[in-house]
Length: 59
Length: 512
Image 1 (cartoon, rainbow over the protein chains, first blue to last red):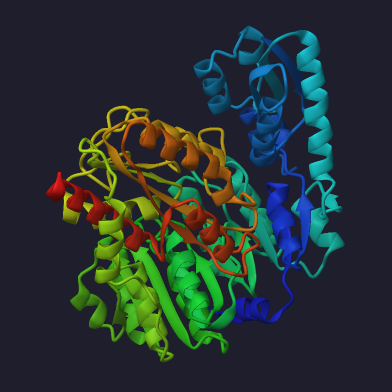
Image 2: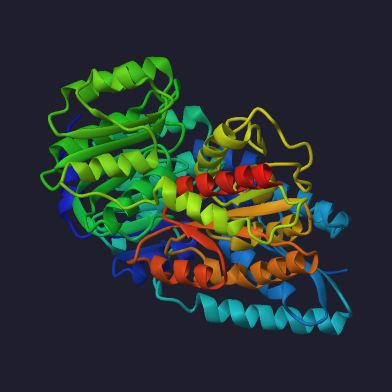
């Protein structure tokens, strides 16, 4: 497999987008790394049918 | 019973746990639960009798605070205090937050990795968004369908990106400890592993010996199963072989599915860097036929890796363990004869059961992979028993015990209450998002357990190991010291701790 993008990651400064518990982002920041938080919530409030509809509509 | 429902207010599982802990500690609160009204959460509410029609009618998107309290006033005061503590706790370093991955990447174009920990059913969507935005992924979510896992890994391969996990507990990238990893020194060893604890364990041995890791790549426990085909293991080997900072490669997994194993062994045969392979349960000759160094277990894997750079790890010798066991049985009552293991890591429970059953015979456990003897009632240990508190029965609606030390805490006094118990075996796992002081958290219970045993005219031996490094915020040396000062017999590794526990039980049987 072409590993150029992975090697680029290994040689870059790590900047993490954290989708999930804030404590994971904070743990990285405490270690001196950059992390930005995405406040994830279930799409359509967790309603499966609405979620399927949203996906279908490409929203 | 008092309750509050807030529609559309989302908090993640770790926040829920924290809020639940804080609320339960408030005066006038007998028991309480805080979190999203998901299916598993409702089951827990039912189990503890904190439920009514209104709560059952809530959806996954509703936030609920439920408690049995002395009065409405006590409940309100407790909730106010909980909210105050939560606000204080959330006033944290991650000041910027975004609604979507796309927004975050637009604001931070240098973003290069996405850490994803959402409920398993939502993971594929989030991973696709991240991969499509050009981000490598580390997916902590568990319970992801294998078909979803295959899809996300195929997309990652197509794009030349990493997709670590799902169910990836450990990954160290560019020196950063992601998800539940330990903080490790950097060094010449690159690790790809399907067992988070396995990676963390071997990396910790390297750290303790003064070496370290270039990168560690967690594939998730299902990667080497037939439907996923080892996609991330193969990608990880390619990446580490190409990485100039990685001089040696270490691979860790349970024995892969046969079709996957052959593919992986072929790849290992072509690898040009020195490599140590631990595929638990895989025939030694097949590993050695690839030109790799075979490792028997986690300790051996760390030791053989260190051998490549002329170093070695110091583990307790048989003679040292025998001497510790001889000391430990002194003062035990005649009826004390069983070991009870309470684990926060599944890999560690398996390892301990296998190490001990060779010496003391069959052991009851709550995981069929660890032992054929299944414990019928999880709240009632029998004879020699080991329980993995990371199993689903304990973690439904709660984070893993590596983060939430409270999951396992009740085990100590429960096991100690049984006069036939001679040894309580524990593991402690350090990680930046974990409990700030997992050893300190249980010391009071250890002391109380020791007192209970003394009052019965006996003595309980506590045996433990700590997984982590001196670079972890909790510092492994401090954690070990605290345990030792409380009379806990601390071994260098989980395997050694299990060996010691088994030696104590065998010796006790011999002397009666």
